[in-house]
Amino acid sequence: MVPDPFRLDSESRLFLHLLRGAPPPDGPAVRHLDWRRFLLRASGGRVLYAVARTLRDEAPALVPPPVKPTLARIVDEGDHRRLQLQRTLEHIRRRLDGRFPYLVAKTARPYPYITFDVDLLVLPEDYNAVARCLTEGGGRMQAYAPKKQHDLLVPGLLRIDLHHDFCWQGSHFVDAEFVWSESTTTIIEDIPSPTPNATVEWALVALNLLYERTYLPWLDYLALQAWEQRGSPRAVSTEENNGAPLPALAQAGGPSPQAGIEGGVHHAMISSQARLHGWIEGLSLLRSLLHAVTAACALAWPSDAASTPSPRRVPSPAGGDRSILAAQPGYACLPLIFSASMIARLYAEGWRRRRSLPCHDLAYAAFAKARYHLTRGQRFPIYGHWFDLGEVPCR
Image 1 (cartoon, rainbow, N blue to C red):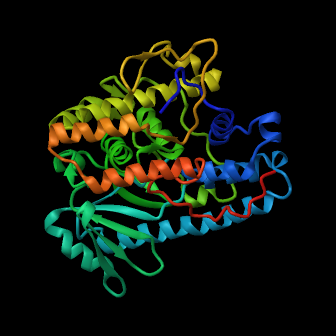
Image 2: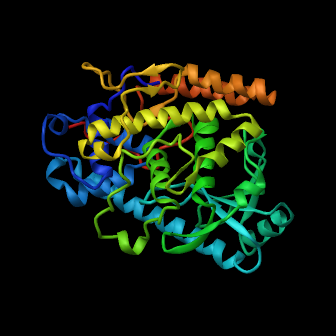
């Protein structure tokens, strides 16, 4: 999963510069960049829009002329998809506000990105009424049995994934009381939306990584870091971001996530849920991985070193310690796909603690990992590319 010791490869360091709002200096890493591969990795990391915007607006001199039209098309299509998200959230707000309690979950981010759907949580007793309310006048419900939910398909809007609770691989991992506790309001694409608090959002995204995606994209890594340091993110709005530079993201080197309360995240509450529902080992594996990546980002961005705890010994996701400050480090890249051993440990814990062995999900995890390697890192689990990069010139 991560080499021992762990440092970011050259492309990942370029991503870090761009996502932090600081264009990288011109050099061999940029001049010899395989642009098609780089943009495919950005798409796999779910940051293609943000990277293209920064390159187009802040660092056009670094982009070869044949690539610039592609960046413009990426931004144009991304702007259209962001407006779809805005219209979807406005549809939900207009239909449900004052009538039903609801939460927009796993959607708020501190910078713009592209999503295919909106996760909407409602109370079990309101589930059918909310579905009718949102599809009235055009739209339909479509059952999605693996996650015990329905998808609401309304013309012109993103898919609305309607939940009365959250489950992965047919199992429940958090209590309803935990998810609904101390909700907040977040501005997402100019629409005020009720959302879970930072602790709950951190836990839901962590569960999504562990039991659905099985890889760590830039989008989710930086969102988890933002929740750690600032609490609930103030999502970037359409108005303030169209035609303006992307905001600098959270500091890459932050506090260790193992502590009880870091920024807006109460990790003791998450650990309690993990012990109760049988995913404490998976949570520990993810925390170790996040800590290793944070330390690697700090090495790639030396100005963060003063605010980062010494990463000289970092717990390994596979057990034991790994020194990440050795003289001749290995290299890894983000987005980072989970190792076969980590995936095996997740499913082994599920069998031991929850007596759950979802064969379909296990088979997909094996297929997705094989496909990732056969395509040389161009296809990631679950998430598909929203922009066709097949015609992008390599140089």
